[in-house]
Image 1 (spheres, rainbow, N blue to C red):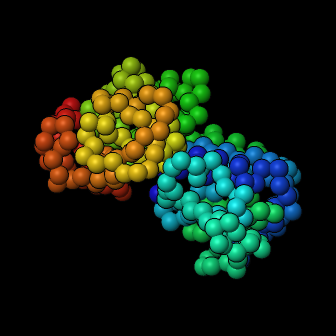
Image 2: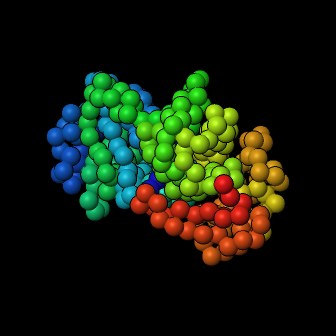
Amino acid sequence: MPEGHSVRRLARQFGDVFTGQALTVTSPQGRFSAGAALLDGHTMVAAEAHGKHLFLHFGNALVLHVHLGLYGAWSFGGDSSFAGASSIGAPRRVGERETTADPDDGGLPYEGPPAPVGAVRVRLAGPHGWADLRGATTCETITEAEVQAVLDRLGPDPLRNLRGDAGRFAANLAGRKPTIAALLMDQKIIAGVGNVYRAEVLFRQRLDPYLPGGSLSDAAARKLWRDVVSLMTDGVADGRIITTAAKYWTRRNGKTGRVRSADDTLSLPAKTAAIPVRADAHYVYKRNGLPCRVCGTVVLAAELVGRNLYWCPVCQQS
């Protein structure tokens, strides 16, 4: 499932390529025909994300609300001008894919969207390009009041990191008996964290994933929040989740991302440098059976709240 950084990149993508344009909105699959008709011909005025939820706001005070879930994905296409910030300087990630036609590179001139391929739930089309949605858990046309109702059910979003959000997150944990690993996946506690960020931030903070969430002090909860903010912010910039310090990288690829320090901080200026190959990007996620990068103990895995949890039993002792 795309995590919060991917959905934030998608919101930027939509904002870049469609804001201020009257869009043709259709449902080639037919399952969203009524909702599409409410938006068809209206101008998209803004795109925003909160956690894993995407909201595309239209000038008639209606909103396209999308949650990709496990199987949803957007694809984009258009002429050579149809490119967004999410494509610049970073690889594409799960939940977003883009193609462009560029006559200078021998491609054919853009002549409008191609025939839909597969079960396209909704298609948005403007003068320079199109976006197709497939497989989403949620795709609905709602009012601004209904958007607020969705937001009211969600915890704070680390990528918004509004004043007071760190304290709100700490308060959401206070007195809670479920494990911290379970609570980090609860979107009412914190919005946008998925399985990768959960495993990695708990390792970086050396927290036993089975600790009750309410056992964290206010200071520890705020420190955890700050690390999630840092990691997810870098995820937006890089287009992928990189949680390891540079000293653990054995190889680098030719793609660029934020410069990382040799220790466990990711707070250096947003310069560009080679980023690690995928095998070096994480401390524990999907590394069960392999030695911990820090202590050499075998990384463990177990199912928790329906997803695999990964941790080091030595570095993350309670």
